[in-house]
Image (cartoon, rainbow, N blue to C red):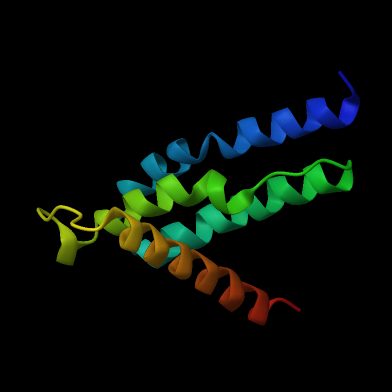
Length: 108
């Protein structure tokens, strides 16, 4: 196993820890957008480290389950069930991509 593949596995492992980030943030009262921005920031940082060493990680797919958890837990959706899982996932992807664009717009 090459160093790059080992590093990619480590990166995926860090991104697999996203549930811990969400759990840690859930009790803080932080708004959903802040929680998603934190997940995006974590994915970007780990992805960059892996990229610098020639590896690749699908950052969006790594954090998407946690983004879905955050979105589903907002007050307006509490107690409701997802009627169209594909549409819900597409919306969560759009929200995540929007957060990425906003964060990149403010980077110097």
